[in-house]
Image 1 (cartoon, helix red, strand yellow):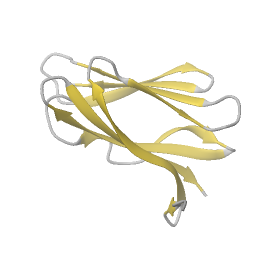
Image 2: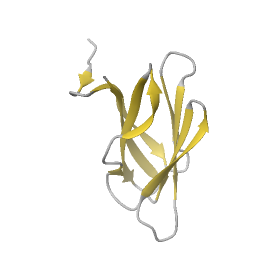
Image 3: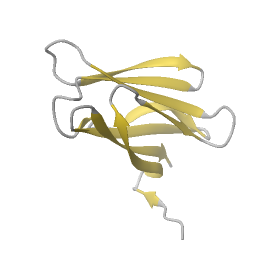
Image 4: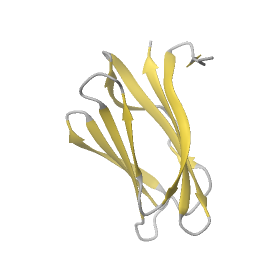
Length: 116
């Protein structure tokens, strides 16, 4: 049985979670057509700052999402949909949250939304 999630405005094309060592990060690839969209999550620290993230386009179909100071709190991430590109001609967005676990692990929750 296949489950499909959607809202009034979006199809949720993928959603999941993964437990990571904070020093390793993670790459997520979406799509079956070439080029495959690639999103890399990295975790790092900046002195005495609240948690924040920034993005860097690293290729025509790839994006780096750097998460800083995500070891300072519980359930940190973006609250609004964040546009990351297009998938099959439609805008693609991500919502992600992280929870710091133990001394060096993070759980990354992610959902990918495509505008209908």
